[in-house]
Each structure stands twice: as C-alpha cells, then as structure tokens.
Length: 59
Image 1 (spheres, rainbow, N blue to C red):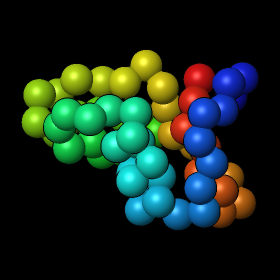
Image 2: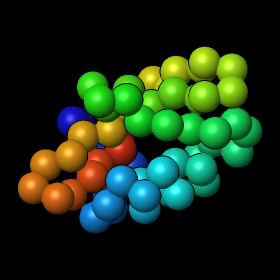
Image 3: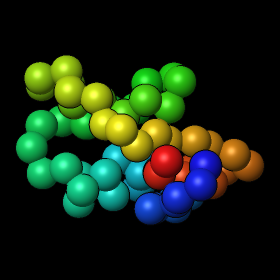
Image 4: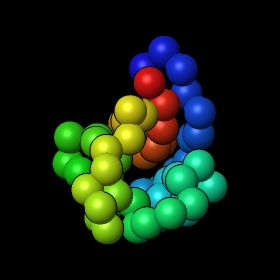
C-alpha cells in the first residue's frame, strides 16, 4: 500500500474511521479488503489491509 490514510488496531475502529471519510451510507469491508457502501453498493477506490493486527486504509 503506497498511501496510508488511516491505521487502527481493530476492524471496528477502522469502520468508525472510514465514516469520517464517507458521511453517507453504511460502509462495510469485504474479505478481499474492498470497502463498499451497503446502502447503494458504491465501492471506494481505497482498500483495507490487515497485517499483524494493524488495519490500514489507503491505496
């Protein structure tokens, strides 16, 4: 991941942090790291990766 926007230590914290970037909808993380809006199906161009207990959100 070249550009990290947010780092957290849990998936719950990550989802709370993502809400700061995306006001509308209910955002979820798929198994492959894709971030998507449950309400309208929109997909973020940022991704989430988890490694050694650290969650990273970025490109």
